Image (cartoon, rainbow, N blue to C red; front, side):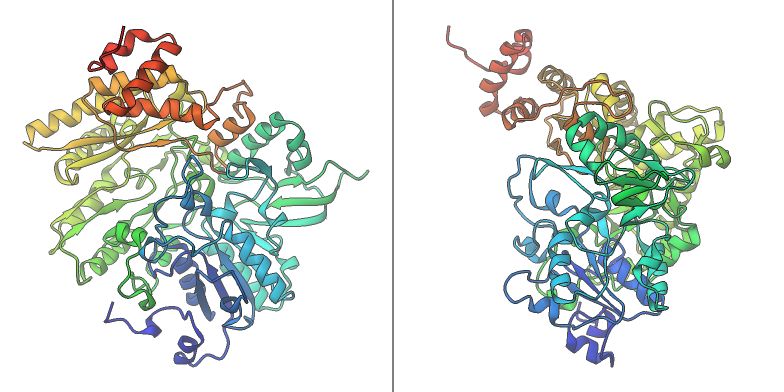
Length: 619
């Protein structure tokens, strides 16, 4: 990092402002993550976007929220507003495991240190700023606020919470990928308009004391009604998810309490969620990635490592959005299901930047995105896409309108690999094998899928290919919105065959989840048997963690599938969750006794010899 100067970064201190000749800034961005000036880090993206729009922006990373609040006062009052970026990950997921225990490290803090961010920084930071500067507007953004924009279940508090603006005294919330709404909001505030005059900006959320309904508005059950009736919360979520993933969405209104006026207006405090902007065009997403990032942590972190940065420092993101619609995933709730692709030229420019890094050895760790192989994919008939409400383009079956041609992605891989100095580009993002196996009426797309599969396995696997079957039970997989496990068998056969033909010693690394809604101990026992038969000793596993704004979380909390309103059982207690999780580790001697007891209890003693062959039980 020695080649960079302080003025190469957005300023974080008064001294750095002075080096630029600034006596004030337009926007002060408070971030719960360390400041890494890289397009994968939200605070840098928003800061650089606003800088490119002509504004003076400073970042205060990980301010101390204890004591005299000096970090909140050190840069003074901004000319326009304060912005809060609570972090690349939800603060609670970042800090706690599924068992609500402290994680071993904070991946977005220097040296992985804990204690540099509060729980719910959106709330804590905005409360402090409102206390110190009561007249300065506050804008919330980021994943934590975005996924708490309406009534949501909070696993760590174990309660239903209202829109985060009810707890965080900010003036407005920007949800999703925030470049476009942030620039428009800033332009209006700079023109002298109050935030109340910005309530028509797409992709924003605000609280209003009275709302006049417009044609097309969707009025959700009130927060008060959802507290009384879990089924109402489940009913709400279907609308929330559908509108998050529509090309032309409707405005969502959610009263905090149940009340209407005679003229049809909603009285009392109401949450208003404006529809999102259309998906970013290639030119727009290129402009975001082509901003003058240094691609390294701020100089203040010299000598320290930031785990999340180390993971992605030699990777390049080639698109945004994901049309998988996995029930437990928040990507589509934040980025939407429509794919926004960077141009080949923009991708190559960033790869060349990576190649100039002093410790780059010729290996890209990932050339991917939210999903590895959705680049360039969209509906053949875009008019149909504009009316579509499906949250997933590939579940329960792949949409016949979806163009699954991998040709554009192959072109990107080959262009990158042709660069002098690139020894290998690995694909670290999860691959959707259901897209590779799909056979459409388009023979060109089918041929490209087979070509991509061979190229992926032959040239882009670093010994281990990550895929995510998630479970073996088709019933559980339907609730997860994942394909049948039979497709995993088929893909593994192809993978093994190509590895033999190419003389490659490579493995598939599958990801699995326990305790997902609808999953039972018997399902987990079946998973253990099937994966054992495949010679897997599972490593990449997780216990389902309910996170805000996913179908799985709403099903887990309410007990209803939001789309069918049919009852769904879930493992809820720590004892129930551990009873499921143990089946991942049938090969560990310390787990065998518990597995044997569970198998007897659930009436599957026939599997004891299968999973615990070395047990010597006393008669």
